[in-house]
Amino acid sequence: MSNWNNKKGKRAFKPLKAVEVVWRKGHYTKNIGDAEEEKEKQELKHKFKPLNKRQKEEVKNQRSFRNTLYNLLKDDIKDSCFSLIQEKRRIEAVKPELPPSFLEIAESLKKSSDSNANVKEIFLEKIKLTSEECGALKDMTVDQSCCQAWREHRKGRITASNFKAVCTRVDSIRKKENEDPSKLVQKLMGSTERKTNLAMKHGISLEPHATKVMLKT
Image (cartoon, rainbow, N blue to C red; front, top):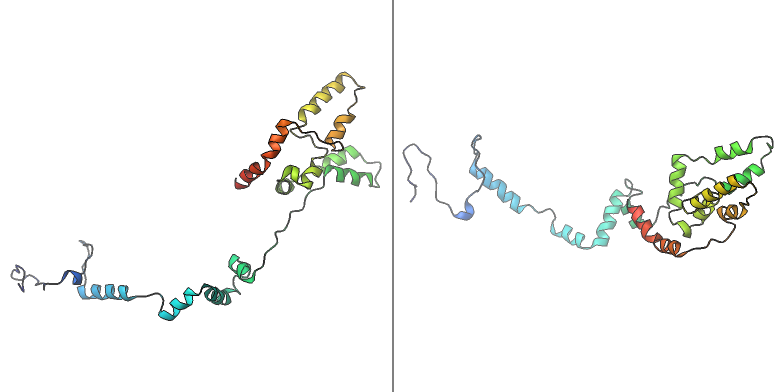
C-alpha cells in the first residue's frame, strides 16, 4: 500500500492520517504550492494567541486595564466619552441664545431715544427671525407649557389655538368700528388666566409623549 495505483511517471503519494491532511479549495488556474508550507502556516495559525498569560490576567481586572489604556491615550482623546468617564467629568452643553420676545422688543422700543422713527416698521423688522434663531427657539421651548421661555415667547403671537378667535374678532371690528378687542388682546398677551377645556387638557397630558416622538425624528 506504499503506492496507490501509481502509474509510471506519476507522482507517488504517501498515505496520511485524516488529521494530517491539508484541506483546501482547488485552484484550477494556479499552482497548488508546497503542501508542507501550507501545513506549517496552518500550525502557526492554530498556535497564535493574541494575549499571553500575564496579559490575560491584566484584562480580567477591568478597572486596572481601563486605567492603563487611559494613561496611554489621554493626551490624544481629551474630550472623548472614554476620557469623560475615567475623569468623572461632564461637558456642559452650550445653550443657544434665544431671540428677544415680542414684549422685550416692545420695551426696548419704548426706551428708544428716536421717538420720531416709525415704531411699527421697526417692530416688524425686529421680530423677524433667522433660521438659526428659529432652531434655537424650537429647541429651547420643546417642553411647551412646562417651559417658561415658551410662555414668554408665546405672548403677542397668533398661534394655532387662538387663530380662529383673532379672525372672528377682526371680522367683527370691520363690521363695527366700536367693537372692543381688549379682552382678546389681554388673552394674546397672556395677561389673563388661560382656561383649559377638555380637549386642551387631553393635549397637555400627551405633550411628554409628543416631545419624545419629536426628539427621535
